Image (cartoon, rainbow, N blue to C red; front, side, top):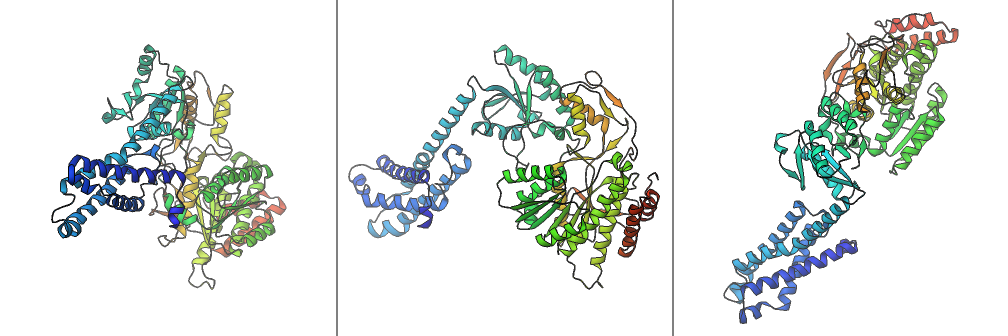
Length: 635
């Protein structure tokens, strides 16, 4: 009764329709099968009422009232078939076992009558639904073909294209008239998908545009689905052709992109990665994050802000954002609040260098997990202002790690970099030193002789350049392209590892879940699998082509020389680190050989002394002693 009271007016209308359809199906069956006295005997109002009431119970249990008719599909049709089957089998049991042999001496319905009722019932129950879906789709297609709708080609395999067509049909994408499809698959050629014909392959784009123009249909847009970007060269060629032909190109996210709404988006450089994105186990992330209290330092930066977004998306109970930039803190809090999720969000202005404030904030908040993303990361600046790098990257990390222990956190995750391996810069050396301190703490807590129970795990996650993050080459190249060039690249052979912000942050959270799970091994460094490194000059060329321009013809590329602290290639593992695959795709674990905690604390004391004296040589000596493969230049 309580569930009946929760039905909406629309659902009550569906219930009424289904009951009337059942009564009509039963009467139609009797009229087709019987006549005269036999028909009059079966047109008993009590009999019809009893069958309809029983049918209503069956329909309610199977949920026929739930789905909206505008989305009627094979799934809804299968529910109708099951409901009709249950009702028909019930009548068969009633006719052959309970009723007829005892009261009539012959069968009241009979097998043929029940079979006929089964068929008519399915037709009556599904007919109105199918008709409603057809009228809705027809109305949507008429609206799509009005004067304001843009004739559009959709590119991709049939499975991806189907997502876009459904989004257009249900109104999620408006003012789009799909006139044709292009697919790279042999099996998709010369077929239609939801009534839209496949016109050929990607290479035939210009010919297809011309054929439509001959029919006075001016195609003005392209929608690129996920399968277009599986081969980067193909996507670049399509984008170049689109720009030349005056077409607006948009992309449609695949259903695998968690949280992605079914809406068109501009094609971004992230779509032109030379490898497919790592597949993320979102169930694992949700199970790990849900209900937890999480702190993110540097939460206003591109990486920190994305970790905050992932935390509330996956159901964190509380989130504390720490950021030393007031504008950045305001921006991320506004962005998170706009999502209107259930997480309790707080933001505080705080500098990780301020040990007392970090201790107080974490102790008051009592986090389960701390993500430490606050850092200084620009190589040339830290080569010049080396003391600032030590203060933030070393002492800031020490402060957060010690505060995490004092607050009883289950884990601290430090965001590190591939530049920390065999470092040649202050950035790399300071990040490696911070890694080593966390590793020393992790090893200390893991000792069986430790009197404290293991309350905090310390892990570091290394990844390379993050596409479109603050200060990365992507915004820089984009600004240079918009200004007409030139695009500046330091060296033609310089390569870097790249990944998207979303991918990087999802894998950071995944690494944390592994570190705290039973499946983990005793490792404290996780390295994200970024595939093959990308030449920076090739990235610049792709970005130029993404704007429909030609490198060195429309936009010049100029090589400016390697800057202090840079190297041509980045390294993911040190020579003394043993590494191995783990059960999580996209992540490799490493078990580095590190100094003891007492040794680390002695080095930290010397670093502090060097900062007070402003002695770069003393700082360098400590970093070289702690990080034997540090090859930076002493000032």
